[in-house]
Length: 251
Length: 260
Image (cartoon, rainbow over all chains, first blue to last red; front, side, top):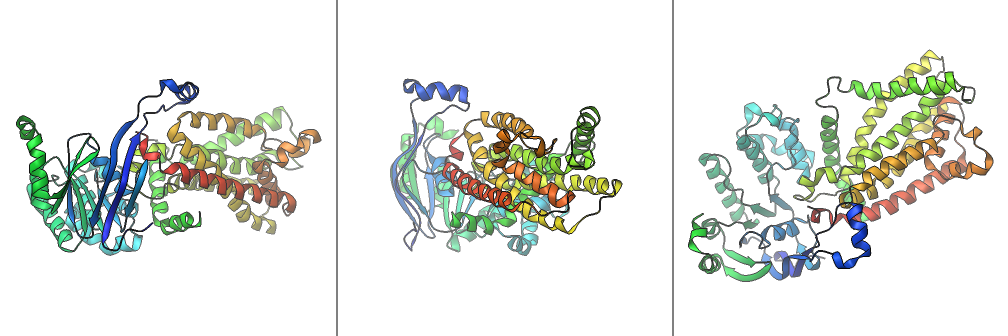
């Protein structure tokens, strides 16, 4: 199924239920014959519907366990909904746990190719962008070194650089804007604004009210898997903050 | 199905990079590195030759036993090691599977691909052995790529559902180990199929690995074409296994990331 022409992401009555299951036959077989012992299901999302238009910048806010990450995983196509339909139109690039696909023994150069191809780029596209990726990550001198010798900052910079060069139409961001030193953070923010101006659809998940109000036009608020608010970022975030006790907000 | 295969083909660059990634991980931290890919079949070859040729005097179709057994052993090792590694390939890459979407069948395929490198080292031993026994290559060896293609399809067809099931039940990898041990003795690797009494012959008629091992021997050592009816049967079984295995894999794929 396709999304409507002006929408990038559509959730139609999406429910995601997790059944806590057994990971070995020893546990599975008894529960298979004796249904009474089955653990109660856990609902990460309940009957959630929304449509994100192309070029919109949308924040998803909510407490831990509210279903934010599950929503991102459904958009990324990593998970399938239990009920309902998720439609996504366009190339998705997840900025979720940068460098997840890196192999410690491979060099930075080889990992750029590996990670780029995981994100859906062909070798040709990667070659074309290679120098720009390395320059963005500021790793010119270290690019032929195995990434296991990289500092955690270098690791994340390279992951971010590959992801932002993957020419995404939909960018999923999960609390990664706080990587690297202040200088690199500025560069990331700048790059995100470039994407925004170019009409890339951006979905940003955060606990931080400031990040969402400063960057997003619109926000969705999730509470225990239920969509409780959907509207202009400032308004949704203010309503959300009103429900959070102040000592929690400070942390 | 065709849509999935087209998507898989479009992402062939990723298959290549994943294969390299596996290869780098395979013998790292070991002092001898890739020498193991050489030592592994060599020690097995010497042991099997000693036990079954010197001690037990197995018949070997009039061929030197070492040559006879190696031509069966190399495709068998490729099959068994490929299936074993592929079974763990998805469950061993969960950190990736839960974060980014890509066609998941790339993981078992890349795992199988890495065993082609091991097979290459084995072929060097085979070439050496053929020189020692003064057994020159023949034109019928041109059948080998076709036989290998059938073997690859069959191996992948079995690896897909095993890799998918192993995400849900880690018992699957042990099950695969047990079945492969049985399967090894029911495939004419260390003995010629001629010694099998006719009432048990059906086991070998329906075992694609037996069909393939027999065919490899004929085209590499006996200067003969493969038995056509057997070969077509083997091809048929391989294609059906692949179609069913791939279908099952794609059905189970959507639930992979739910397993945390």
